Length: 276
Length: 104
Image (cartoon, rainbow over all chains, first blue to last red):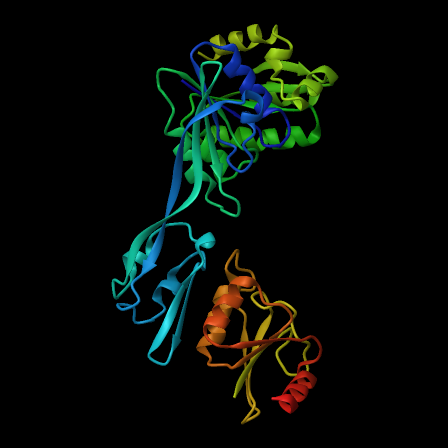
């Protein structure tokens, strides 16, 4: 079973909730899919056993075959190629950080002068902490292909386990890549107009992906905004975590919620049963 | 000799556009005939790689110098590979051209 933890707005408590789930239930694994800023390792301090490189395809030019016609540069949707023709010679310049690895240039080169090359865009790390499995996707600095790293991290989902996915914030490609294929998506929000606005967007994503969703209100205080929205759309409110200095302080010191206040374990086990 | 100037407008009375890849117009000026061609920049609103495409256009026109405010690192790679020199300037194009022609 795969449970993803997402939110439109950043800083609502995805990592808090994802960790609380993973630490409360039996037979779990946690997958940090916030590949642009993975932070679960700060709380679990896992021992990393394996590092798997994530690669993307890039074109490699065989200059002796190239006629410098410039077709690859014309068709590249991301402007990642530049062809310079000077007299009868020239040069093909690739800007790897702009390349999305679609292979269009390789397939369509009239001279068949391009071959498939690879470059590393990130890593997946696998480790253990207190006996349960930790997986982290990490995108290299200045790279943009977050979904590729997320998909690679998710390839280590074990069907016999309960996999908790910590999704990146937002509603764009990386978030979609993280939520897609989940059995359930927990949307974490906060009771502010910003929280509501982005919850609406995130909920639309789960609907489009055909993933069931429920809401956890973090920093719970005066929640009528969120409650009204959930009632109207028929979304269950799974839990409320109060706005508390104690919880914030523990988080800031790298202590997961259920280690600081162990009573929450029961809540998360109950939510799991409800989701099932 | 051909020179490319990034321009805010369509003629030599315009100001130099300080951006290269996302300038409004490219003016290709021939110092021998004193004629020029204006090309509207199709990559002004491109989501990425504007400088690369713009640089490739400039190279294809066979210019020796580019006069602009600032060239990004990607565009710089392309024009340098083609042996084009970059002159960083701001101000009115007709005056800059006068000044440049004296020094070249």
